[in-house]
Length: 173
Image (tube, rainbow, N blue to C red; front, side, top):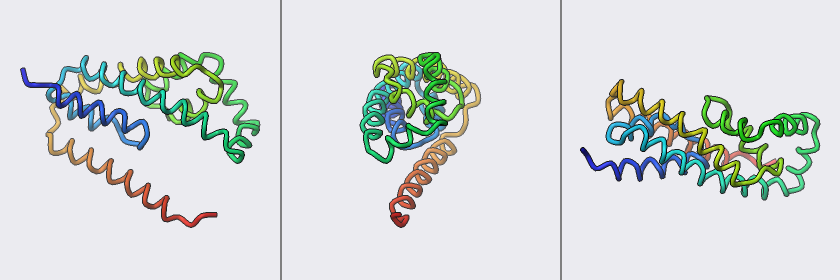
């Protein structure tokens, strides 16, 4: 059996990074699945996603204390959305983490509703685990060429960097 520690360590780092720099998780998962078992990837993904969720929670709560952003919370649509996620916050968070839904909605709304950080982190971790497990199992079966996966990972990183540079160069209003 090959040494899976490097693959799991790389995967953990990529999962935490994906919490802050938008990255598709699939190429990293498929690449790591070449040497690590799907259950191990799911476990690492859950821990990494939960770790990033703690930082998310604090960052969002702090950011929305800025006056301009605090004003957004007063808008009727925002208040309605906050009300919707309060109905079943744990289930909503886990579902958005598990399914291909826009997670940014939950990432912003849950911390602002006052939902506890530890519950949010647990829900994110539990949601990410089955998603990553399924991707890893499929990756084991399909055996996509490593070069293609590395290329997809690099392309994702380049797109993120380009978007960041573009945003920094945009004229300030």
